[in-house]
Image (cartoon, rainbow, N blue to C red; front, side, top):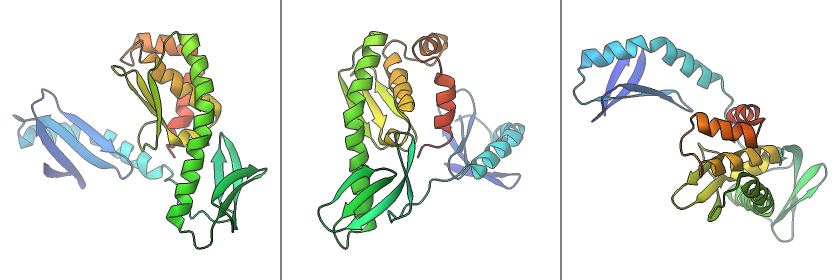
Length: 229
């Protein structure tokens, strides 16, 4: 992979056996990557990048203004979210490691000298258990409504996707971070992935299904796109 500097912006250039040129401005740091045909000359690549320079700058500016994920230390007073509701974390020392809700707080009970990484793991596993309880209910309802059936579902902490669908295996994967969002968001993601069992692409047929089974899907998608974590 080579480099090219255009208008003080570093661009990483990768040549592949393709016909057209593509530019991606990658989150979160605004790194610019170009994928171009093997036969493309440096001059052709430069002209293409210059034609897209305004879009590249707008995209980088938007990413720079986007809030970064909050850095948690898992100490008393921090804010945690559960199913769309905001709670204050209260860390209590002594006894076995566990998490529970006591309105308006989420109680994190830990042994003495528990590290930050261990606290994060305890909270993560608690979120996982929350989803394990509610996913079957929402998934079952959505499967019945849409008329499809999954063979398997999983929970995974993903950085770039709210959900995925393996059509061949009829398996959907849901982002662990959905435990922090409202049940409407979880239902939207489940419906989205189930519809892929009917329609592989995100074309007109897919959107028609989304309109039918999740009328408010565009607003929910917009709220989810604001931040993945």
